[in-house]
Length: 262
DNA sequence: ATGGTGGCGGTGCCA
Image (cartoon, rainbow, N blue to C red; front, side):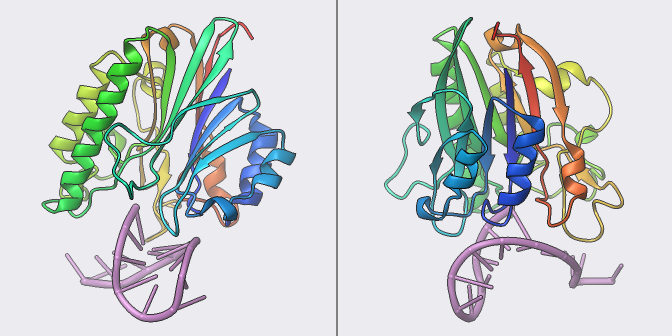
């Protein structure tokens, strides 16, 4: 079972790249972020033609998340706990049956939080607390789950091309990193680091200042696994080549494989 | 060197 996450930075602009990648990577389940689309703007026909069922939570212009799957999915959440009426479209979650029991996949688009010292940063930290609350509920089931997405947190200085350049960035703040560690310390496994224990493993390169050409990247897209899922982890990957294609997203797909007996 | 690029929507906001 291959599970992937990809921040596509507009699903309409990226429909061609997305369908092409689905055909080559053949993930079983994918969570997408930054759709920047409402439901009626979502390229459902193109994605279904590629063999995927698609569920999405959209809004006008910003945010937006989707869950794509080759297998039947029961949607279990369209927002985190304590959602408000005009909740930004940042979370989707579904459950899939496997021979080794149910697998829940959550798709996360965590608030950026810049600039620091503003209500935006406070919202980011509060959102991380809500995510941890959801993770606790899922952990109590003692089932397999994967929380994948754009976490907008650089876990350590190894995960950023220039720690000093990002010292005042919300993605690197001690408070952001502490909240991510608290989430992981509930008992989750950072899939990329479980297998690639050293060196940069960037998942994002800014459009500006030749970041891609200079390999000025960040690792901010993560797959966090429950103990029951981590026990079945067999492989991970970062599809870096997507960043070098025409009209790319600034993020690339990140994936893991779980041996669920399928 | 305090810019730079990209997407949305039709002007600045967000990343």
